[in-house]
Length: 103
Image (cartoon, rainbow, N blue to C red; front, side):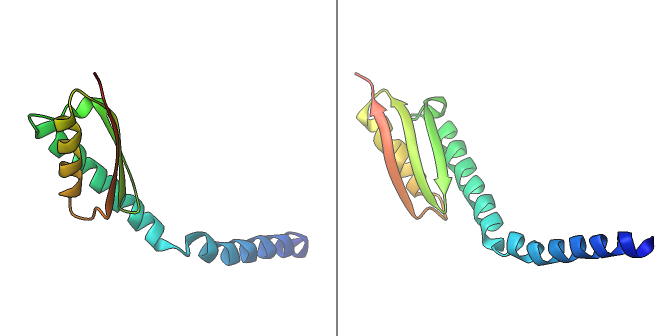
């Protein structure tokens, strides 16, 4: 009876062991996710502190250090200021500003 259970159990454990390293092979993915979340949080915090930028109207997405800004601004000055803030955060590689100015 133990042989009937042991063989499938051993096979399952072997498969998990083989798949484990492949699943976790790219540890930098987790690190990038944390870094990206930190970058996004820092940008949003700086926007919230800024007198020109309305942080609630602007979305910030970060992937591999590349930041995308989107949303609505009341002026070109606000749009430009949001980009300046994003570029000032450590770890930002590039900023794509897709904020639309409302007329």
